[in-house]
Structure formats: C-alpha cells, structure tokens
Amino acid sequence: MSMITWDIPRETLFALKGSTEDVGDMLRMASAVKLYEMGKLSSGAAAHLAGVPRVVFLSRLADYGVDTFQLSEEELQRQTRFA
Image (cartoon, rainbow, N blue to C red):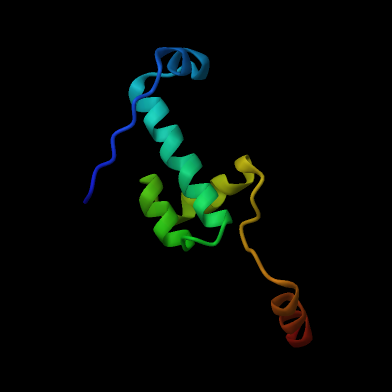
C-alpha cells in the first residue's frame, strides 16, 4: 500500500473539531465519496480507499448528498423497460 502525507494546518484541525486521526479518516471518506461520485472509482474501490466495508460506504453516501446508484438516462430507460 502507498502512503500520501498531507500537511494540515492547526486551524483546520481546530475548525473540524477532531484529532489528527479523526480528520484523516474524514478526509479519506470525503475523497473516496467524491472520486466515486465523479466515476473515477467503483464503490468497492472507494470503500477500500475510505477504509470501510462497501456496505458502510454505500450507506454513508447519503450523508454527502450522493446517490447510491448512479444511472445514466439511457441506463434508467433500459432498466424501466424490464420492470
């Protein structure tokens, strides 16, 4: 596994009201959610990045305003034809 190190200003830690570990977890989850939302990572890969099981990752998406399942209009039409 690779490691990326960020320098986080004390003010940011204070503003986020968390320990270094808590803020690190928060940043991992937020980046995983955004990369999933952008279509750069699958839900499984994003969950792995966030350090949580896939089920937990999917359940947390709503906290960030991200739909669990992202279908294009064409995919949605295809799915509704079979319903």
